Amino acid sequence: MRTALLQSSGRPGSTVENLKVLDEAAGRAAAAGAGLLVAPEMFLTGYAIGDDIARLAEPADGDCADAIAETATRHGLAIAYGYPERAGDTVFNSAQLISADGTRLANYRKTHLFGCFERDHFTPGDRQVVQAELDGLRVGILICYDVEFPENVRAHALAGTDLLLVPTAQMHPFQFVAESMIPVRAFENQMYVAYVNRVGQEGEFEFVGLSTLAGPDGVARTRAGRGEELVFADADPAFLAASREANPYLKDRRPGLYGSLV
Image (tube, rainbow, N blue to C red; front, side, top):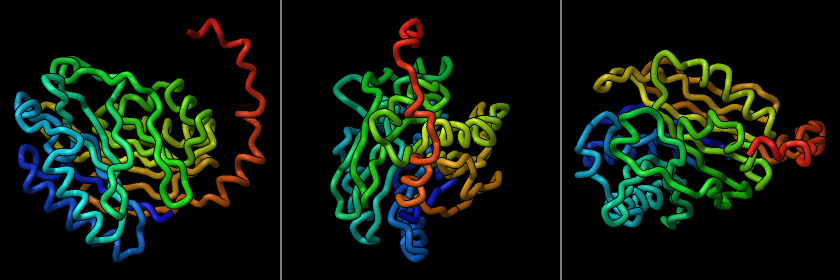
């Protein structure tokens, strides 16, 4: 499945403008043959927007989700995007996957919140593995800091995730995560990992870009630079099956030895 990674911070504070940016990117991605477009963490509203997070938060089936479903249907591709999700009085840092026919396939709430900023504005989710079937691939979702916990990615591997989507807001000086950790996560868990970042200065944060899609061989299929970009790579089920057959990590596990880890 050809996958488009939208590396952009959009227009922080404006869902209207961010929906336009997403629509334009969806048109370009579809024209390039992509079946999936992935946008960064909190793309819908912006990340460092303070109390506007709560003001702009919407339910998973809110007006913006409807608008993105219309965009997905019009351009004929699936879209995954980060946003602040409101559920009653609670706000989650969430990511949602919508299919090319406008169906909401999966909604994931970030389980590991990073730093005081996120802990002040969000409640952590409590569901580790969220998946959906898309074009012959089992697609899973994590958000940013979640992927830095090997337990999270291994849980996805054991649940059969083929392509792990990771909308992120990766900031300086932690660019080694994009450069080194993501290819290793893909290799040690035998999956594709699409890590899609914000860029530039936003409030106190400097986002580093470097979005990538890494394969089960640990090789980056594409890597963006430090500016706004739309980059593409393929998640190939046949290559994934061959890699899993050749790589013994998951077969050679000895779970009986790991009880002390939890």
